[in-house]
Length: 373
Ligand SMILES: *[C@@H]1O[C@H](CO)[C@@H](O)[C@H](O)[C@H]1NC(C)=O
Ligand SMILES: *[C@@H]1O[C@H](CO)[C@@H](O)[C@H](O)[C@H]1NC(C)=O
Ligand SMILES: *[C@@H]1O[C@H](CO)[C@@H](O)[C@H](O)[C@H]1NC(C)=O
Ligand SMILES: *[C@@H]1O[C@H](CO)[C@@H](O)[C@H](O)[C@H]1NC(C)=O
Image (cartoon, rainbow, N blue to C red):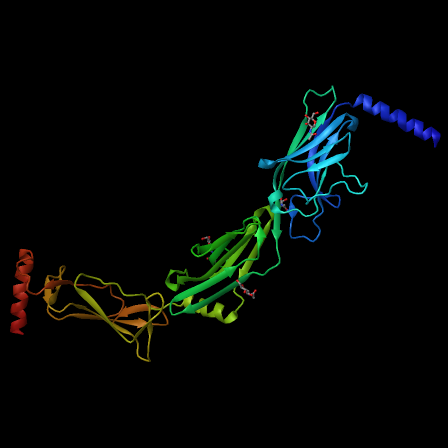
């Protein structure tokens, strides 16, 4: 053993002579000896270490000084005294020498919180003459995330043609990205609901996201979609999809959103009106058959207006067009079948002054023919 000791001593002298250079090889976040990408503050074991890996002869080190963002110096280790000084916000959250137990230049976290995240710089002051730079240093962006105890909560109710939705996340850090809305079958968010979503951060920087009883009109919801929220924390590769857990509401919503009837009938001409009989409207203003009788819609010119066909130069005093809703096919069919509609204009019966000459003439002819028949 005597020989070995001498040998080791020689070796030590040899290495310190050849590698007087001091260098910071990097800063590493570790836990239980394993390298980590970030701190998970929700974990039970929070004994993370921030290691400043120093290469070269430690005998040349004067002190190791850590700074953090705007906080300035947060941790210093002085080689000569092996003493440690800790400042806010690390104070009382990291290990310090205690009852003869030493703590080195690395930061040993005991109870980290999100105020301690940010850009750490480890500066090593040295006496090495081989290195021009003093201190040598490196930087590390310490990121954290945390998912605290708590549940995701999603609910919805439907009243008439309005859906009211609520959502809440557990507390977490950092600020999650939350997308609530209507997603299609291939997982695309087709309509996002942004209104009503509140991002709340408490004094401990921890986030909580919620929405309460936020209304959305069923008519504004795309068909073929379903409602849910996603919560993402990208640094942790974390994504959580929260679906409605109440089956009956999900079904009711699905039925309301996807319900389809005969489309709302447009007003086809000025002063032309459409009268519907036996129609039950859905949330989109579409029409369903109300009883056993099919829905009939009748187009007419308003009272005091006559019908005029420009192409045929005909005026008719009383005209109407009936269309029927085929509920099962969700289409309207006119009584004369599939022929393209030849719609008249509605002209004011007493508007001889306003109408162009040819039309005036026609009106007169029409009145005559009406009186003759
Ligand atoms: C570390 O050492 C440098 C160089 O000797 C000195 O200027 C600095 O004040 C020291 N820092 C602390 C906190 O002891
Ligand atoms: C849903 O969230 C509310 C508070 O937002 C809470 O009182 C309730 O217990 C939660 N429900 C579930 C099932 O977690
Ligand atoms: C879902 O939406 C995306 C983007 O709008 C579209 O490309 C995709 O075809 C849709 N899928 C279905 C099943 O509708
Ligand atoms: C997140 O996922 C990407 C791609 O899968 C991966 O390269 C990256 O290392 C992951 N990050 C973390 C922090 O796990």
